[in-house]
Amino acid sequence: MDDIVRQAMAKWPNVPHCYGWLGLDARGQWYMRDDRTQAAGPFPQAKGSLLRHEKLVDFIHRNYEREDGGQWYFQNGPQRVYVELELTPLVWRLGADGGVTAHTGRAAQVRSAYTDEQGHLYLDTDLGFGLVHTLDVGLAADIVERGEWKPEPVDSGALAQRFGYVMSPAALRGPSPAGH
Image (tube, rainbow, N blue to C red; front, side, top):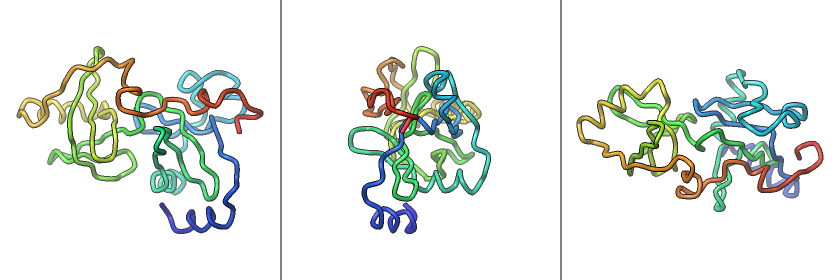
């Protein structure tokens, strides 16, 4: 977490949390979800605006964390912005050397691999659980063929509960004025 974020949290400890305003898709892309988007439906049905500002995305990546209850959030200064997930809280990118990196840029160590009924490949790592990016499935297949990962079958509908993450913190919270 950035030092400036820690300082803001200490200075303003009682800023209300924000729900429904930020989404993460299955390709590791962030979406800003304004009031109109939220009224149009849940994420990812109504995604919102793709965030393209590189410095903002980097700031989100550095300050993206998980609560003990499995809700993932972006600490935006003193405000915690809970993230709506399309599929998993992390999206894995693979290097040619087999190294695994989260969409946030953090390196991870693989503990186990899983495949669902749709053929998606997931990794459980020291950073958490996530989906292998579609562009890296070929590299992942090579790793599986070499026997380095032995994917176990998993039901996609049970992923969040089994691996301890919350798909929609906003839905847990229930309706609120203007998505706050």
